Length: 385
Image (cartoon, rainbow, N blue to C red; front, top):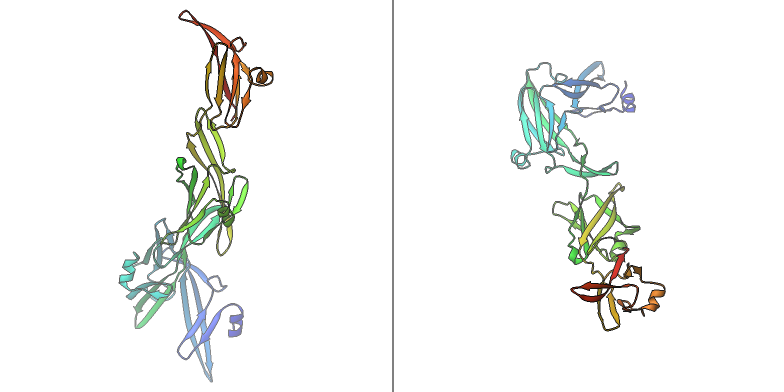
């Protein structure tokens, strides 16, 4: 190929008074895959022809770069590079003069390598770099996989190996971007509610800095964060020193979107159905997280009956308690309603009702106890929560 043809095909070729530059993508047509010491490599061999007057000079070049060689655990990244690269050296017998590592194209001194818990090991076959997941020099990124929150960790280590084979010295430098596989980090909803305070206190997290809370669905109602705060829900973002964040939400028990379930005689379960709508920036990738939060409180005051009697009738007053009129009163075996209301002189207000039941009513019962005749009136309630 001429230089123009090579550049049209995606190669880069350039010369200076002291250098020859050849660039090629790993997947270029003329590159060759090769496995060296279990590490996949891409190899490119080329010959460059220079003509000046009656002289032709040919320069053979060979380039090889690792295309993989990384292994992952939840805690550690391991990157292997062959110490001896046959495409670059005529003999496996080389003398290693220096091996250095760095990050983002900058070499690091041994003290910095140690402080970051990096490891650099040179064996006869492999040069191994170990980097803890989450170490300084890299960064975390949020992603969504099947509406599940996942994260990855990325870092770009550099390896510089200087060796000598015969009279020649070679400095071999590799920059190798690494991104871990996705690591699931499903958000956790933590219920900090103190039932006696009668306010739900819920925390959602933990997220990386690139996650934003967009909306909250409470029951049937969808609210943006500002709208939720205007409604009195108190939505707050909390950022920690390492940049991670959580979101807190407070909702009063009395809010119309809070459901209630009663367990007689005096226990009530408050139920808060939630769906968080979040996004990852700057991609604006959306995802959701549903939750149901419950709080149990013994706060039911059942109806109470008080009264007295004289020589002719029972005088009875019933206080509703705090359940309103969500129950049906019975006098004896009959529901208090219809014609009985007038018969028993029924009166009511917002907190109680009272009535007068004569002794000769069919709802009164006569009993004999210890030789004494007693007239008994039973006032019962049937709840319908």
